[in-house]
Image (cartoon, rainbow, N blue to C red):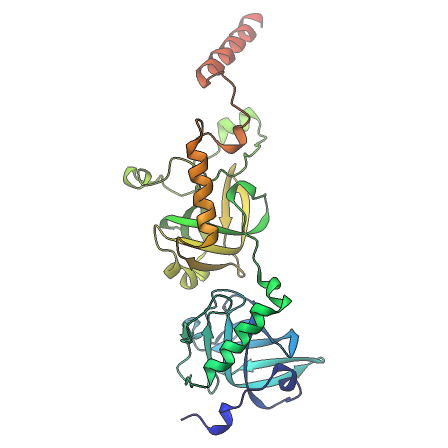
Length: 339
C-alpha cells in the first residue's frame, strides 16, 4: 500500500529545497529526450517539468530495468505524476532521480486532455481520486497562462523542408518495410518536396549512377499500386535502436506527427532520418493540421494541372520530354559530324 506521506505533492519551488529527500511531484513536461541504454544494465531517459511555482523547470532522470518500463511521452505539454523521487544537487544544479526500486509515474494528456486516466503508468503507481483535482488544475493553468505558447509546435509541409534541417511533420503512413540495418517508413502529406539540384560529371554517372529509390530492393507492384499518384513520398530511415520505441505507432493508413526529425538529400533523393530526439505521435484524421493538409490536397486536385509538381509552376513548358530528347540527339549528331 502507498503510505500516507506519499499523498502529499510538493510544488517544484518547494521540492528544490528538499535535497536528499524523497518527494512527490506533478508537473507539465517541458522537454524530454529519447530512451537510451545506460553504462550498466539499466535504461534511462531525461525530461524537464514545470508547474505554476517554477517555470524554469527541473530535470528528472528516470531509470528502469527495460526500455518498455520508461515513460513513453507522446508530446511536450503532457502531465507527469511522480511519486517517491529523490532530490539531488550537482554543481549547484538541482535535479530529481527516479529510482526503479521505489519510484512510480503516470502520464496524462495535457493541453487537449479531458480524461483523468493515465495513458501510461508504472507498476507501482496507485491512482487516487484527489489526483484529478491536481491534473485539472495544471491543465487550466497551462491553458490560461502565456506558458502555453511555448508548447505550440510548428509543423511544415514536405514542400517547405530544407536540406540538413530538423523539422516537425504531419504525414500519413503509406508503407513500412525492414531493411538491412533497421526499417524504412514511407510518409506522405500530399505536397511535393523541393526539387534537388544534383551536380555530377557524366563519366561519374556512367560509372556510378544515382539510384531511383533508397530502399535496397524495389517495392512490389502490389505495394506501388497502393501509393498516391500525387505528392512526394518521403523515405524515413529508422535504426534498430529506435525501432522498439516507434514501430507500434506506425500503422499503415493512419496519420502521425513526427517531431524533430532530420530531413536531408541523399544520393539525389530526399529522406528523413530518426535521431535520439525524434518523437512520433498518432493523430486522428479530424486533427486540425491533418484537415489542413487534406484541404490543400483537394484544392490542388481541383486545378487543371493539379498533379503537376509545385516546383514546376508557373505553367510548365510546352516542350515535351520527347521533343527535348530529339533536340539533344540533334545536338549530339552535330557534335559528332563536326569533329
